[in-house]
Length: 134
Image 1 (cartoon, one colour):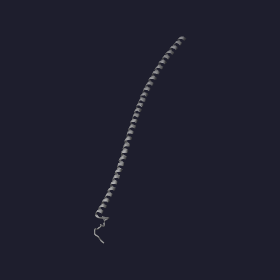
Image 2 (cartoon, helix red, strand yellow):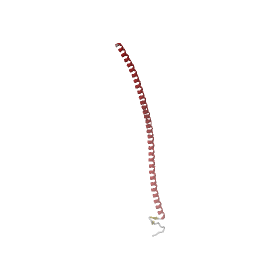
Image 3 (cartoon, helix red, strand yellow):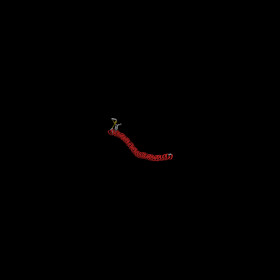
Image 4 (cartoon, helix red, strand yellow):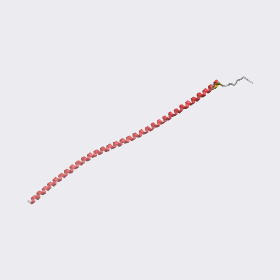
């Protein structure tokens, strides 16, 4: 009877060990599947983040290039505006110079006209006469 009890006990222990081994394998398999699923999900998210990061970096480079282009264009416009302002100032100087020359020419013309008519400041200029007075 004791040997039968020991034998039954050993059989039960072996059955429990086999059952435990089977449960351990199933648990390891389940944990492996969950880990793979989590890793796949995580890898997809990481890949999406890296893709977005590359797109952002590409857009940042493109924006930087555009900014440089617009900065150069703005500098060119400022230079053109400065040239235009200088030209306008020169035109103003030329106009002033022409007005001064025109005024001087009128004064000279009026003076010549007075001299030609024989008057100076509205008075007759004495002329030399050919008659001899003692």
